[in-house]
Image (tube, rainbow, N blue to C red; front, side, top):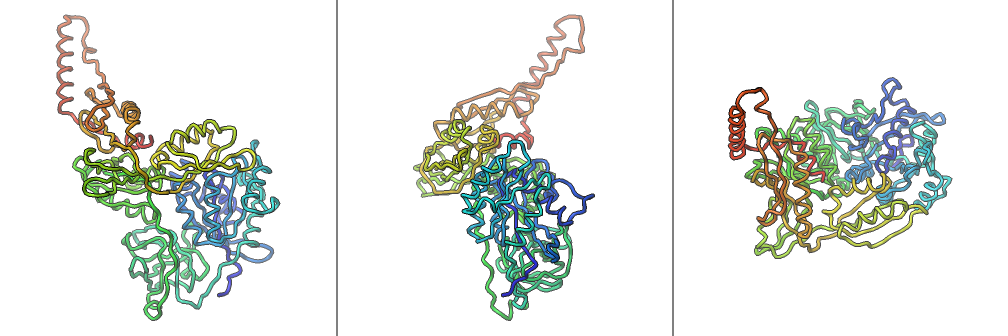
Length: 599
């Protein structure tokens, strides 16, 4: 193989809110990729949700041209998310590049996802360029952060680049380091085509767009192609680069990153991690597919149903298209007597679930019923061991012999000044501490083994709130362990609302039941009649709240006269509300489900 000396493929990775998108903006400006009059903050964050929340959800590739010391270079950048729920996006991007900019906030220092992403990059043998951002901030601890980072990477402190992405300070030094230190891709134009799919998208006219890194050979417009894992034939309708808008060129060569419009319109045919071959070349020669990615393992499951049963096909179409550029999303049909037809979906965390449901609402106009997120349990009964994805599948308590739940290895990094509050939250997880380390002089790393259900809902927000945003976390699944759990059901007007059911420890049933019915009382809109909100375990009511009826002053139009006229109107109103209570149905808006599942 030879090297294409003017190409550099790299990504930016960091913990959430350390300035990745702002740095990407400065790189686009410095290289002239985006004209100044068209530049806007978070340019590569194309979704409204990303801009509103100030986070990157989807990886975004872009090709930049840059002249350095009289030589023209092609710089292929992938901007990646930082939240732990979207770490799979980072792992996919790593396989498409040779280098990684590891970005750390000078005011917050090294955080959990910084370490996790560093380990991922190290496993791929990528060149790591350490960068400290936000050196302009009043509370920046630039030198202490540089010392901590140098110790972790095993390098000299002077090799760390210190920047302010907001002000544009020292940005050119990053491009210089990328050109100098990141190795050019190894290329072989003469070999048969092999392209690695690292992401995809859908267009109604051109079909599925495969985001690819060309490893061998080249892909030209009108070439017939074959997808190995998908076992599907297609044709290169168009190929080109990301500038960052799609820029057709007619050809992609070995070492380059770009897109291929496949003409395939069935979402299930394209798999992230699949290999694209030239159909004719693969028929004449045996070509080994590229090593793909490790399958993402969903850790949180929730059921999604459309409030309008006629929207089932639209929901199915929406999930299929979202999966094209969110490979970690899984879904399969399910049927419930109360809710009708829907899908049981797997997510990498509750933020992931929230983003998917919000996108379905915004992009497809769907009003959804969303069940409480739950981990996967294993239940042993008379028939053997079964896997339980949803509280709705929970067997009768009298038949259960043993319950097992997943445990996780949780890493939390916190400043020493917030030690007490952090330990209080960690100790509430019913787990145990396995390790503790100092990172520099002002931070501690705690390692715990905890039940996974304790960290999927609310834990991240509680940790951030208790430490003013300075603590951080990452986790990995360990194994299944025995637990004493029960199913908590919520009844609204005497009817079980299965979407709100939860699996919880038996000793927390009353506490959690009381909390849920109180929160439901606060979030559910008032009805025309009083509504009983109840929590039950094994058929016994353990907590209750009453949602008062909407008030209407029926005697307001009356003035003076005999009181019996007013009494007659009040009695009629009372009778009407009683009839409504007996026959009426409570309609629950989609936002109530979202608020409830956030904990």
